[in-house]
Length: 76
Image (tube, rainbow, N blue to C red):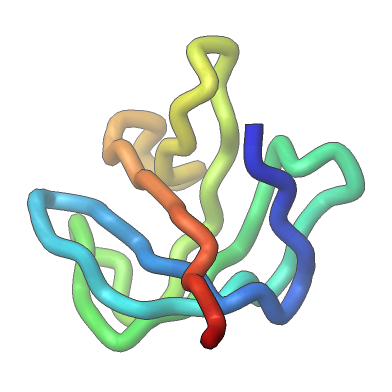
């Protein structure tokens, strides 16, 4: 499983769209993150607190349903 740290540049996929973003806050065990992006996903404007569930999928902490997929950006 990918480990994220504060400041990581990421690609955020949610609601069938992918946008660039950044990790704003990361818990030491990577179970919870706050991510920032320039978009609106499921009512989240510009940022979203997310939680990794037992199945390994991150979901919005607010509704527990909105799935969020993250990938670190490749910096060249």
